[in-house]
Picture 1 (cartoon, protein in one colour):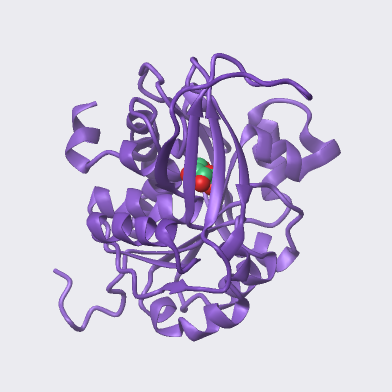
Picture 2 (picture 1 turned 180 degrees about the vertical axis):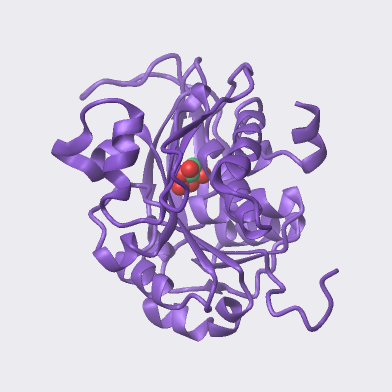
Length: 308
Ligand code: RIB
């Protein structure tokens, strides 16, 4: 189906962060000035960009990653994880600073708290995006998050091939320029990110927030609602916001579930599915991802999603 003449040999290009996740399980998080004991340290490949690339590739998407890691052991761990999943790592640049690190605590309910030290992610520049023009020319969907500089995100929006689609998860949330907001199709947020973007306009129901978010400029919006699934709103259909329920699962570790959701959504949109249908698949991918520990290690194959 996809021969040498295919103008879009990548289903998905992810532009984003790659972090080593340093994870400790805790009974409860310490307050200011307090010390608590936790579990043994686990080191996993993570970072929102690297997570999305692995999630998509594991589902079967032809995926490339544009990212920057340090010339160090964490960088090797991240490259190995991408390659094992089948991601094209030709766009994974090396050097400039240590690999990004995420300090993660996971509590007994599976919820996590994360502090990110961006390291090399902060050195992924607009020039790196321009130099990756062949990757952009080959991608039908480009997915980006906010663990890299905002200038680099803006350049990513400018670098899209004609007809290519931009999926943005503004995480961690930051004020976005109009040129980025109006390029999003969709903007993918959780409730926390929706409130951060809307500020005083965040009152009401998730449906109200979805309407307020599309008023900021995106062609479409997806709000993830944790165990409740997701809500989608596409300005090109006149049906209004649509709820997409999630299968019920026992959460062990939610780390990376949002990344798996967004990657699955982006891939299915690139295959031509409408937003509600793509989100219905993506909530199943996100649900599968919370049933196992870690970020990338928890992401399902297409067969595992079908069995859920
Ligand atoms: O979304 C989860 C990711 O956020 C983790 O893998 C961590 O690296 C942080 O970037």
